[in-house]
Image (cartoon, rainbow, N blue to C red; front, side):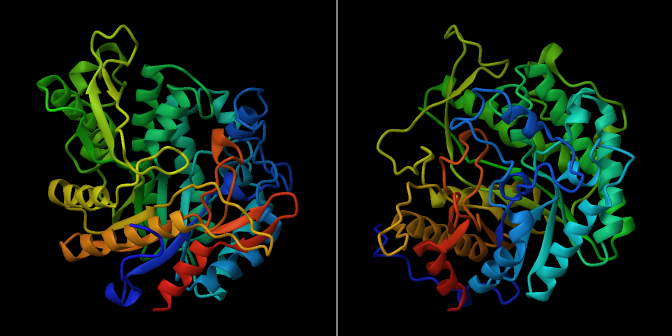
Length: 454
């Protein structure tokens, strides 16, 4: 489907109470990394090590949102969204991870939340979007059970400060990425390469989520609290028995490793025995704590995965022994991710069928393309416009199929620091000129605005 032949879709085709938003995260947009008492994060340390970031950059300045937030919130309001998902930088609140509160950090988020409410934007706060205080990493990071206690303390501080105005809370964003990209693959902070550590990190992230929920509910009257997972529809690369079995194992680690314990089933019984000595250490009460009921499940959807069996190929794929196979002749973003809107429908239906969450929100969905600024200053991005329109159509189809989908947050409001890719990838509905910090709404942003006003 070309961008000039977009599906006929409008906001009016969704339920009247459907929540429309855009998402951002602290380290990717805020900048001001060394201002007003903010402590060092694992991403500050990771970026300072040569070779970690493709363009040698960091989030030290990023979009300078810390100083330009009124302009950015005006931009969000102009789109017509009624919700704004942001994350809070833990080291800006507790620079050493625990105990000593940085009031200037709390004051910044208080001003930010007030700015959202003044513009009719419902605040959706994510407590952890990957920027762990480096001081806690120096003591073992998420592999240490003490970091779980530190997260609960941090949650208490933030929700007591902002809970009179913020009613929607996400504990963690994409724990799979925190664990496996940061502690096994080494491509994200803190840059470790241990499968056992990654699995222990998984467990402690989930445990900290379960332990934080009662704190949120104690401090925030009428709180809606949940967690956001990066989930993927998994298909076998071929119909061979080996690949079919591999796809099941891969789904067990990619999706069910998080969904099963969150919904009271413990870790997947078909996966846990495969892990051997790498399996996480846990206390007898941990699984019950992890299964503390959520008010909603956040889903970040980007692409499906095709999986083949990797046993016996001579490479270390971990105990699950699977490999992701690139499908030929499919549409892809500039990141190389497959564009598959129907995969979103099948994924959401599967989550509803197997786990029956009371509410689901698409907390991220977006695409990166090689944007070009025209001589007149406009940015025509037809591929992203098409991507957005087709995924919104898929969201509508999911709602019509009975999925309790209650909202959609586009990733992202702004181009930003894209982790290990630095500033080489642009996901924004708004183009950011990093040299001048000028913001320009792309054609896709204009389309989203028009959609929200139809």
